[in-house]
Structures are given as structure tokens and as C-alpha cells.
Image 1 (cartoon, one colour):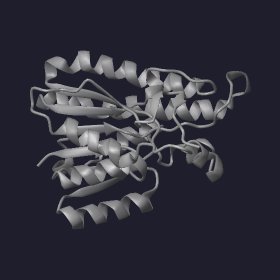
Image 2 (image 1 turned 90 degrees about the vertical axis):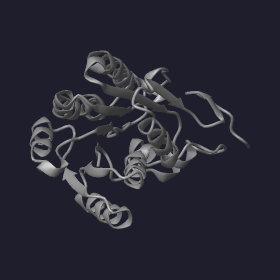
Image 3 (image 1 turned 180 degrees about the vertical axis):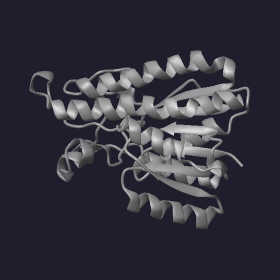
Length: 252
């Protein structure tokens, strides 16, 4: 049976991916900072799908915490076949001149350094086994830029670049690398960006039907279940109403 490690699995896309992978028979290592949510999810998936599920509580920004947590994974979970680097966030929405440097640090440390720390801890095992699949959850903000999204866009451009580098470096090791880049998806993303302001968060999705976490998890499922000789390098996914990062057709 295959084993998947999903970061940021306590909500949104990570949560939906965990459910989809359990349905597909993966044993799961589910990471989050919040122990309550992740332990509840592990219990639920183990019961519903008869898979083994290990909650792994750490903050991807904490390099030592990442190394220690992944190093503590028991042997029966040790052969990680699939890594989903999902943990990420946007914090704030302001022009660079007015930016909150704490928000910048949080985005850079989570979206870029966190992905690097986790990948660095998992890839050597995949190389040793000569098999694996890494799926990085990016964003259309990794290919486009929008006003006041400066640092967030920069971090997602980094994720896109790292995905391409991984693809080139790991091709001889039979390790697949996929970048999935969603457009506007209604999860806790905007709620986190606006620091819990529900009205602001809801306004982002007003007048059109956005993507859902399940939509992205379905894309993950598709990529994971392709034949061994087929790799999706990059998958850009947008709502029908969204043409570009800044062009959304909204109904009155």
C-alpha cells in the first residue's frame, strides 16, 4: 500500500486531498500545526476507508521541527511514495510601500522555505527507492502578478521555479514532479489573508462560482492515478468565470 504525506492538511485543499487519497487506498501522514483538527481527520479517514493515518504536528516554517518530525516517522509509514506540499498562505493585501514585514516573513517562511524544508527531508528516501511523486500546490499567482499581491506572488513564482528545478533534478530518479496552480478557490485562504474578516473574505468570491477545495483534490487524484510513464508537469486550474488572475466575470 502506498503512503502519502500531505502538509497543511487540517483544512481546505489539504483536507480535501487527504480524503481523496484515503478513498484511493493511500496510508496517510497528515501534517498541520493544529493537533485537534488533524487527529480528528485521521480518526475519521481510518474508520471510513480502512487506511492507516498518522498525525504529524509541526510548523513547516520550523526547520528543526520539520527535520525532527519527519525523522520520527515510524518504519511502517517510512516509505513515502507521494508528497503533497500544500501548506501555504497569503497574509495581507497592500502595496509594497505599505507592506507589513511580519506578513512578508510569514509568507516567505511558509510558502518557500517550508516547502524546501519538507522536500529536503523526504526526497532522499524517494531517490533511494527510485520512485516517488511530488505535487506542489502553487497558484496562478506563480505565473501572473496583481497589484497588492507583490510578496505573495513572488513566493508562488518561487514555487513554480522550484517545481521546474525538481523536475529536472529528479527525472533520472524516476520521481514525478507536478505543479498544480489554482485560480480563485473558496477555502480559508481569503479568511487568513484578511485576518479573520469574513466580509472581506466573502467579497472576493462575490458574483461568480469559484473553485472549491474538492475541485483541486480531484486534479490531484487525476495526476496521481496516471500510468507510470505519464507525468503532468503543470496543471493550471481556474473557475470558468476567471480568465486571468485579475479578470473575473461577475454577475450583478
